[in-house]
Image (cartoon, rainbow, N blue to C red; front, side, top):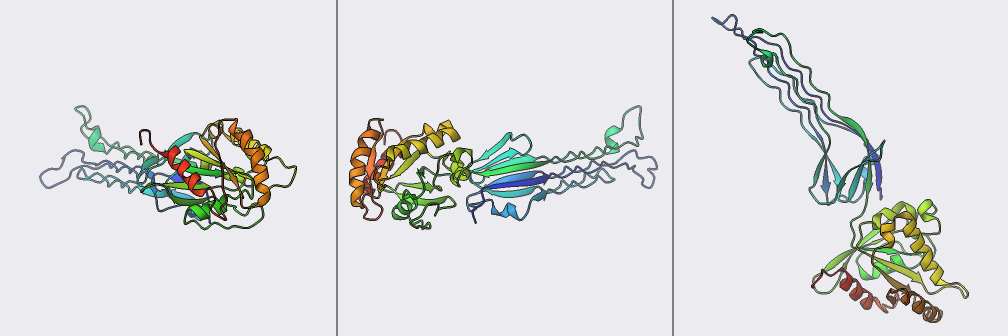
Length: 334
């Protein structure tokens, strides 16, 4: 099950109390204060793990807490620090404060660690308060309380290329042809209900990760349909492949379909509309699609975008599309 949002409560460990104690040994009846400090409370830490793909675990467990610090003891013994609570999250997790929605962390690398709740300091024992004017202090500090907070977690997939388009434009079929991914494919809209990832081999030994998100409809940025729930997953992509169905009914204008999707991307986030984009005219194996393409291609090319005619069924144009992806993702100078 793909879960990309979660809310959790965290409680860092409280610091241990300082100790009030006096040294009492044979022949040393007034040895002075020897109360030790309390230990520090454990932190709550988020750690990125590339082996996790969703936030599913947080559907079943919402509360996490670190260990409190031990109290100080006599003979100047400091209490042990509390153990940290380490929570594993997928790479690509965005962490926000639930109440203010303030961004706290963007976890994008395997093994990256972020302290999201700090443990309290241990209290000082009475040995700390000894002075020339107070030889036998009976004061010790309580431990400091550890931080507690609610966090909102969002997962944004890390992909090089994002596939966008209206429902049933052929995104899942394309992904299944150019990668080993096997998304559900059917001849009706909204077959894809969750994002799908596939690794695509390019020229030489180069590869890229391609993300297929559910189809967008008009008003998606405002919550219509299901695609709006997953638009965040193409925010990190370097390239957008915009699939437009050429097998449309007579009188239907695919240019309007193209503009509608771009309007939804811009309404959700202006950064999405500014990403490099390649247009793939799909379903070219259907005879009527060729006539639609003859009208569609000049209109889009006049906007400075390349249009590649493809058919995921016959394989037409797929090598050309992969070469274009390879070219646009290649580092400068390569």
